[in-house]
Image 1 (cartoon, rainbow, N blue to C red):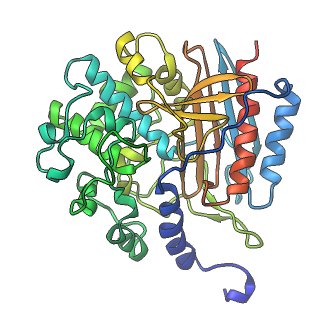
Image 2 (image 1 turned 90 degrees about the horizontal axis):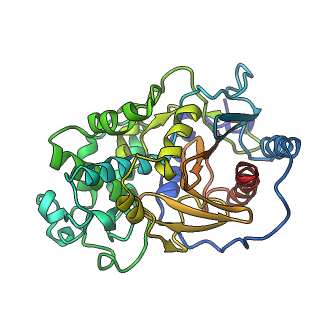
Length: 396
């Protein structure tokens, strides 16, 4: 169709998304203004549903949303809008979806479970385990990688990386060579001196895990995370295809109709930093264990995981006041505190959180992307609705 029709051609949209939105999701996270931990009581269930309905009716907002709350053995599911604009079907808890940077919590889980098995140490360095990486990075520790204080330059903002995506958004990268895009750069700052969210960090974490075990990262995910938690619909694909059925992801740019971009990009270009595909049901089970499930981590490793940097925000920022730990973030809301991770990827924005005792968990998924630089007004509304759901989760 012509440009005058108001509908963008797929090639134009895909190229714009591949560069602009992936770069936005990879940008270093700025410190967010804290939300005061005070306010009205948590909303009733009918009010929660209305908040979700209002979100999908927002101009430029998601075509669909699904929130899954688990309180002990009780599960509540809220959904609004559609998982697929073509068929009009609603989102389901068994729909596959890109979980974006929540995948960083999975690489953190692999690393910390290896710490508990004495295979890794939080003070292990890149120089000891990955000596082929640049000498300027050799003093960076596993702890600094997991806390985003490493200073590693972000490969996903490198001009050469973005040039490949612009030419071919479905290009299949060698995931284990992603750091080559910034191998000629030094650290952005002395390791441990600052916080800067970087996709490079979790690539290095996965490579460290492979180095000490001699096993592919994908197999470590299976052995250390998927199998123990019975995650049967979670995977780390290399290509652009999604398992069926899936929650379709959309570019929503009014007045054009939503454009399905679910399979525009190859997951190989984000790998351990953002390539995992899961379902609301599986993701909820994972975050319950990662946030505080008994037996998933030892007491000492859990203590290290929860050593937080005040003001260190996930990308995008989660509800309330954010603080960063080891592949986990603390979200202090007006109703209490939860622990987890957020993520955004073309077509998707995710929140997964749980309580410190592992008894309550929430996943909140929408099928369009938002971040501090992409639709910041929508992000503010999403964070406010997420906080209402956290309040419902914590309500006795």
